Image (cartoon, rainbow, N blue to C red; front, top):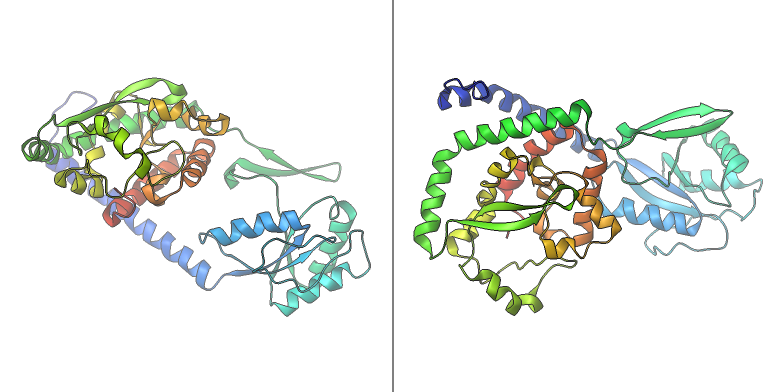
Length: 378
């Protein structure tokens, strides 16, 4: 009705959306319980096999996150090198070249630590026929085998395995940059922004009044940010700081609490009492719905950087600007300002390469929980 220029009753619009929100919340609850069940009852006890460098890489990544069902219990190095992770138990070792006891050594480590999955990190000393024979022995003994790929940051939906001439090939689909999903994302962005502005208009008016009467200065804070393909645009927020905040920033540079090009302080003295509440609830970000409506931002995407931040980007970080910046994103549901700069970049790059409309819908649902929780918002 809004797109066609017809009359819209806000109450009727809210009632029309409620069933969908209830279904989405219920589905998210089921998925959360399923993930919890996998972590609690379906945990895979993993024995790592590979050269020291490969073991270290896999061990660090597996131990640094809990959103998976793989528990590292031990490792069997290949060759003379020793893993740098002291916490990893080493029940045995494979020689640098293929040996008759390869299978028995790995099986012995798996049985000793009750591992039900052997994860192999291939390398020059463990590949080809040696890996194939190891797989035969493990499968004959009823132990599952998994081979670690050097690929990282690629969603499973983009990977398609095929065989050719006895080789196993992994076809990697390119990231989405347009097509039907890009058009649908643009339509959903503008429709969602318009709906949000209509429904939240009373709240926006109340917040504007509270900002105006609580401290001197304008209601809105306008700031130049870098958007898709590094194009600058003016981003809107409710003002949460004193009027001369930018002038006082130079005095606080040494108190910056995050690494990288960002500037963040958990107790920034420039933030007003009302602004602190707005930041904790993320209400100060709502005027960016206008940016979404104008096509400068998306509902979901990486956060738009300041020009001075973007000017310090390296080639890897610059890839964050390949898509439109977002009102929310993986950073919002994963810790916000509590994340390190490198963690933020890693999350943004994963989104840039693996986004889909379904991913966006899931992130929007998770954003509600993250905003309610309030952690990492300051």
